[in-house]
Length: 325
Image (tube, rainbow, N blue to C red; front, top):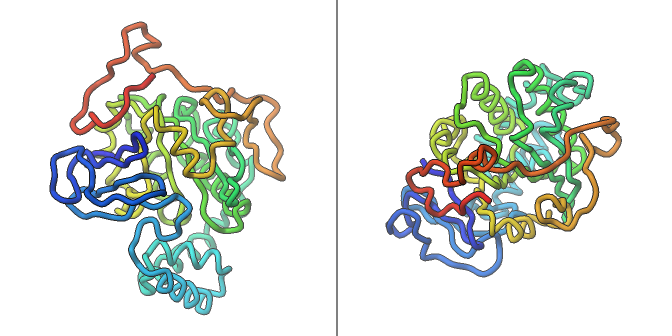
């Protein structure tokens, strides 16, 4: 139930080794390149450590099966091939599963009309600066930075938050021509006391992402140790495929993770990257930026802000995580 942790170029599973080894140990399987040199999944099942650009990152399904499934989806639903490919990948080329998945998404789109959501539909949430776009990787993947420290879910309704999430995700599909995108979460501002409103909105974010925007990739940075306790609850909102896309990146491994995602040149100086100058909100091509927005800067750990040190709250299996700065 613990999050996997990306540290020193390696993905750890704090609960089990792929070969049945002790908690936090490495998989015996190692390869060159990709996001890590060794990976394991809880429950003793190994999976290949491959790069974030790899279309089959979460599955050993042959690419031809995914392509065949996508072709069938295009034929049946008359959707763009990039859309069909996302849904085929998300179900590892299983046509019956992908068919049900895409049919449910199309029904939702008919009802919600997500492509019509604008800034006027989520003004309070947008002004928070919680989400903003960094740009696109050289491979054309849009990158969204989500600053948890700027998130105050009490300031807007659940419906506005859903529209806010849809507004960004729809624009990511447009920017990436219907393909994949990358999410970067700065988790430092996560509240230890996850109240009902916060968890309801977290559930809505995950549900929207899981059901309608598959094939994204998520890097979580600056994650406080106590988040492991909330992860037990949050993970219940996800299916196995989505949970497996989330990498928890240790501080000293941030640059290598950003580089593997193709996002290093987009990372601002405040996070150790090469990009200079402020990043506006929402920073989406063709959309108006807000005249003012909170700067994109990391938060100090809570203990440091209060002058009490920075040990945090230990959690089982969190030993593989680098301490927050």
